[in-house]
Image (cartoon, rainbow, N blue to C red):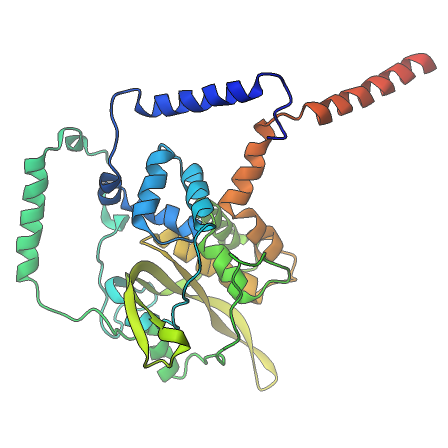
Length: 367
C-alpha cells in the first residue's frame, strides 16, 4: 500500500485486522447467514439495492462480515459484483406482470383492481416491544399458526396483471403518454456516468444511491430547495417481478423464465407546466422510482428526484442539478472519499506546515 510510509506498517495492519476479526466473535456468539436473511430483510434489501446485485445470500454474508455496517457491507458486495461475468441481459420487463403483495394509491380512494395494504410499518405504533427480548420458539410458532389459519379463510384473489392507475388517467383523457424511447440504455456499472446524463443513467444512479442520501435530497426538493411541489403518489407497488432471458438473442417468444426479484415501484404525479395550443397550462408529469426489495421511502424519494432531474434542470436549484445529486448519493464513492481522510497524509501535511513556517519566518524578518 502506497500509504504505508513508516517502518513496521505491515505488521501493524495485520494486528489491526486480527483485532477486528477477534472483536466480531469476542462475545462467543456468531449469527448465521440464514438467520440474517430471515430476520433482517429490510437491511438485506438495502444492501442489495445500493450494491446493484440481487442476491440475498451474498448480501446477508456481507452484513455478517461487516458486523452490520451498511457502508462496509455495500462496499464488499459491490466489489464482489465487479468480479462477476455478465452472461445474459434480461428481456424488457413489464411491471404490470408483478405478483403484487402491497398496492396503494394516495391520489384515489378507489382504483381499478383495488388497494392492498399488505405489510408496512405505516400503521404500527412506535413503542418498543419488550416482549421480543424473551421471545421463544413456541411464541414464534403460535404467530405463524394463527396467521396461516386466518389466511386460509381469506377470499382467493389474483394479485398479478393488475391495471396501472396511470392507465386509468390515460383512458379518461387526463394524461398523455410520451412516446417510448427504445434506444439502448446506458449501463453505469460498465461505463462511468457522464454529464449531461441520460435518463437511464440517472435512474440507475438513483436506484443504487445511498438510501439516506436519496431520501434527504428528495426531502430537500419538496421543502423548497428545488422547484418541485408536494407530489401525489399515484401508485405504489411492492411485489415479485418475473425475469426472463432470450436464448441466443431469440425472439420474445423464445424466452426462458429465470426467477423473480422483489421490488418497490412508485409512480408519483408531479405538478408541471404543459403546452397546449401554444399556451402553458397546469398539468402533471410522472416521477418514477423502482428499487430492490421493500424500501418505500427510498422509492418515493427517487420518484421525486427523477421528476426534478428530468424536467427542472438548468433552473438553479441544487436538487435539480444532476451532477450535484448523482455524484453525492453514491454510498461507495462518498464513504470511500470521506474514509480515506483517515489514511496517512504525512507528506502533504508536512508540505503545508513547511509553507506556513516559511511565511511566518518571512513575516518575522520583515518586522
